[in-house]
Image (tube, rainbow, N blue to C red; front, top):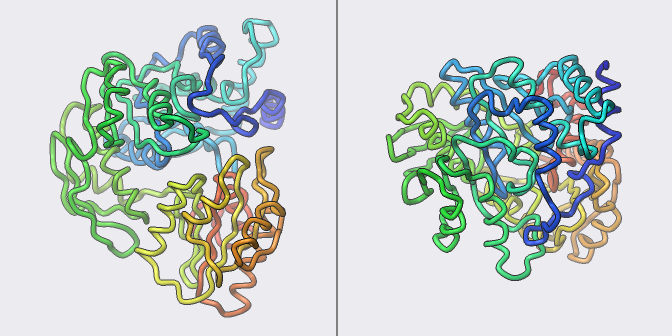
Length: 448
């Protein structure tokens, strides 16, 4: 296969990321049997290296990048598996932060396609299962020292969970992939707890003591809890980020510069340091932590592409993520002009709840758009909900057109305000591509 053929092969399989509305507490019939069959046929490559497995309602992607940076700073070869991708599918499978070469992904998928053609699989794998299997196989092939694996959805029945994480990380438990009925927090926690395997070391970023038994029931050999055992001692704003004092059961790390925005990222950094210290079983050297975080980049996670006017891409996709984005704007930036929101949500979100969390208000301008996903809420429907709040809004279905409209309107008016692109990582991914065409992102993915 060449890459185009490999992409066509992937696209011919059901993509549950784009079509599924799975809710915690409503997972009857889900199983890992199909995925286990796939990796069995491949020789169980996920057993060829230790794994740090990460889940959580918010922050798991950022935490995975931080863990990867900390491990790579120890001169290890680190595989990272994440989802969804922003601009190109190869982003999901990386070694030391560099995406898998397209020709390598095509070759690995070609080998899996041949096995499927020869009927080695009893059931047809999904798009996500194929990519997960390809990631595990490629990590084995290139002999990574450790793999950092981000859960796609929830945890227990996620395709990534055929691996047994030496360290399991749960960043938090909040409302997402749930209908909000009953004791939904325990339902969500129960699904995320599924990545905890007997004998693993659990780094638990969710401090709610009422959920603790859900996680300990899975039998971790060791448990570190945010607030009790690790966390942020002090968080000070600094130019371009935060200056942190962090503690773990093994060490204290003072004046760590984290070059990203948002107080929630400090909690993610604490969890990442704790996870790597749990992996090594020893404290990390302060210089290594400083080196690892110095070059940290988090595309699509409150990513500042321009300062005056302020242009931000943030993949906040649920009320908790929206509230974190709003708190970051209020706490770290002064907006003196018009706030323009390029907003694209997936169906199933409570639109008013998300708008409340973002703090969208009269005086703002909203360009409602449609995320490039079958689950995307049509721009016209979103615009209707925004207009009902007395907020100036226009519907622009194509994300690229919405971004260009917001940016050129702001620049042409000489407005030193804000353009905030948010609501879904699918929206942000399409926006990043549009920003390349506008000269706001370089070819290497860095802000111009």
